[in-house]
Amino acid sequence: MMDKEELVKRVHRELADSYDEEMELELEDRTIDPVTGEFSSAHGEEEKEYRRLYFRELFRLQGELVKLQDWVVQTGHKVVIVFEGRDAAGKGGVIKRITQRLNPRVARVAALPAPNDRERTQWYFQRYVSHLPAAGEIVLFDRSWYNRAGVERVMGFCSDEQYEEFFRSVPEFERMLTRAGIQVIKYWFSITDEEQHLRFLSRIHDPLKQWKLSPMDLESRRRWEEYTKAKEVMLERTHIPEAPWWVVQAVDKKKARLNCIHHLLQQMPYAEVPHPPVLLPERERHEDYERHPVPDSMIVPEFY
Image 1: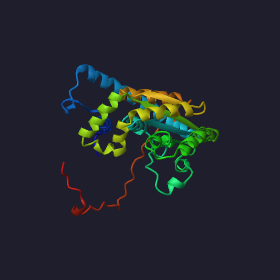
Image 2: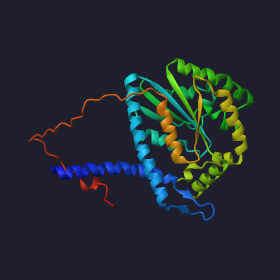
Image 3: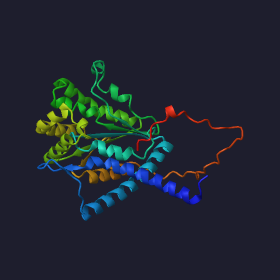
């Protein structure tokens, strides 16, 4: 049995490890010099202070998200959060920060692949319906049914008739969800032409991010103006009182995350749910129990 001092040290190390996970997530924020093609890793004092403030506020907001989660479970609230935006706009980054400290059984992400041959013959919204929340659940859609208003329209994956039918149907579909007690929150992440160019360069030169670049992403870069027109039509025709659009200015990734999480917390009247104190029970020990060693052949080699 370890003494109390050693136990405290171990607990502190465990907490530090959890913060290291957050630092690992920030690796995706490495920026690349478009001239030299090299990663920028040097941070001045001002940048270091900015990062300290960012982490401090992020941890605080994530603590509030845990309270929100408890409230959703207790009240049986149902929430759908839609994240849309251009490729490399930062949707995945904010979704990671929202869900990082939450229970995946309560807050889950729906990131659907392209529809298969069977799904293309279904009612358009059918494959999304199966991912909707039950009582006490939050579902975050990393892209959603709005694919039809964006990529499908620009890339010619839907007909003009299907496109128009989508705009006739989606307001009624979302009103139907709200009447069923599902809160629908929709975010559009907005970045500039120059910022998307820089982020695509970063992905091209970073082997840890190249998987994020698909032929569709590269084509979206060429068709910037077509995507802009499609986005403007989408926001105009689907901004309804029951499920309005909220635009997140996302050129600065860190500010976008904080602003989005802060805004999300304002959309529900959550309150802290009281919990009884957690007491760790003593482990039972029995004289007739003997732990059997695992064969060496089953042990993962300690390479590090």
